[in-house]
Image (tube, rainbow, N blue to C red; front, side, top):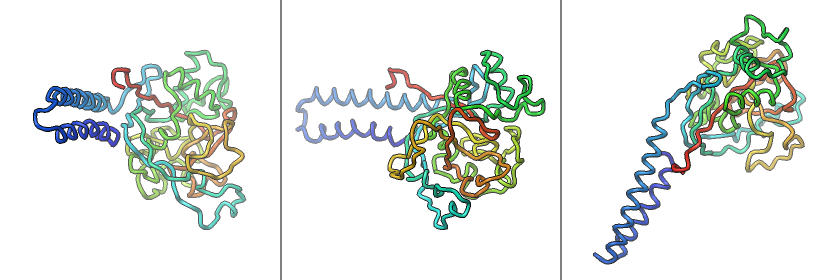
Length: 313
């Protein structure tokens, strides 16, 4: 039973116990019985809610784009980090922003249940979206409106945030929030890497050991999170729903904060640059980009919130 449910469950119990032991025997008998009945009905409702969540399938196929989605159950998880770069590595590489500060502070968050695509959206899937909608904006590296023949299972890239958002909307889904993305990657215990506590060389398509290009979304079987979501540590960085803003409790000033840039999560294949640094391997790493820009190592996946019916609220 999760924390939120425990709190709801205990409140009427304390109320009932207070009434039971503070009232003389047989006094206000009808009120006591009525309260007990309310407690019983409320308890049943809570249990029914839990049963409904337990009844959710661990996987489902999205009807519109036929992608497999993985259930991320409700509960708390660890987001962000308190890690600091004592060696001021950013100065050695000519960067203005100190490492890790964008991810401060570490905190516990509660999320309700949601589904997320098990793999990144591929070229073939994106082409089906284009054909179904007659969407006219194509990835810039496609030739004559077609992706390279050998890359049907590679993640689609060189698309803007708006194009990724359009695909998810067409699929009756949405881009994941930062919190949804990070929980999917780190699991409930806040793992620094999707697969565990230690970095595994070659586990993901990133850094010096990667392909230096996109790879099929199923190519790196070790790049998998506790919830069995793949590719969150490599292949391509991924657009999220959120604007680039400081986390609650982060007082650092940054002129880039605001509603001009969207957050990218995860690492992707690299050919050169500072993203080779170990600091960018962590599952809590975030960066930002103009939603109108597109990149050869940025793609996306979609998520789907589970909205409770009114009778369950």
